[in-house]
Image (tube, rainbow, N blue to C red; front, side, top):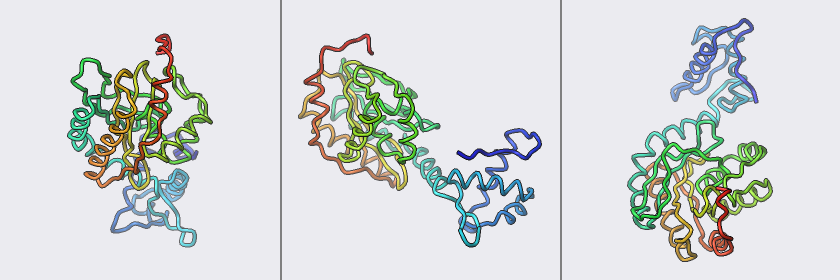
Length: 287
């Protein structure tokens, strides 16, 4: 992956960042295209320095270059970053109402989960706990690997393909008894999630805990996942069929408020409750 570098003589890292963001900021709606020479003149920077930074930004997808005119404009990565920033800025206040309703309707803890800044783990952004005495308690800010758990897999399944490949090429940590740690099995599970529009888990992150989640999508990326999690004694096939629908409705409500979308869902896939029926007594040493 290209890396931004300073000039040949040593320079503080913040100067490179300052110049990089300065270059990105010249691309506006009024003037979306620039040549490297024009950028250098606008910012009073050396042309070779601007060329090097633009080349790195191009390699990362933050700018694109017209093949014939050689002029630059913002790339898909920059548009995706801005799209995610706008969505996340409004996400928590928009989501809290649908999350409360989802928790009340299902009797389980409702969760709003996003990608970490490094996009290699999930972060619990918000949660509404059920009033039932037996419940799953998840603290906002908690991070988990993206291959373990319903909300995490709902995010992972709808990330760009190159990011998925890079993430699952790493060793997959075993968090609990049913965590998927094989690359082939995980790819099959992610394909099934994309096909049915929702993710499920049974004892992938905690002993005796099941979950379902639905992603909320922008035009180019996954923005968040809306899910519920609860103890296995309350898991039944009828409940899952009902709760997939309710979770999808909550995700749609959040998405529509932000100009985002959700994939259509089908609730005929039975893996989650088959796992519950077939599961042996939990081995708590694997929690």
